[in-house]
Length: 144
Image (tube, helix red, strand yellow):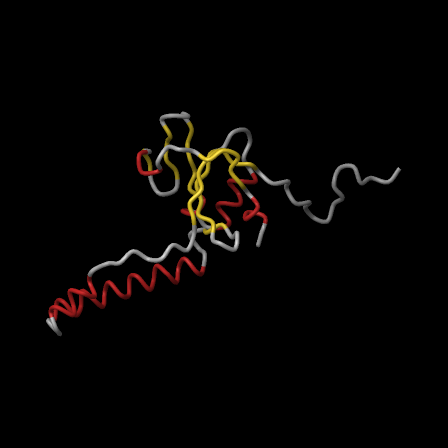
């Protein structure tokens, strides 16, 4: 796990993501009058830059796997799950279109929701202490 996986939300937000206006990366919350950033809609590098550059109140939304890892757009497990769903959908449409057993093809086309691989979290972000950079000593460890 990396530094990004240590973020948390002090008090989860009750406003639904679906009710906010915006796109899959950021939406505006009319209740708290803040943008809510979807870390799981960003690459790991983009999400880390947003979190490390945050000043003041920042609302985030993210999906966290059972092992504590924050899912990001470039997560290999998430990419594999999306590819599997797309492949099955294309195969189902192909079978249904070419009539290789119209009932069998239609059964394959029926989308079943994927099993949950992560739980969503949304609210005011609590930023973990930033890691020291370039091997410099942290404040308070200076020799006298």
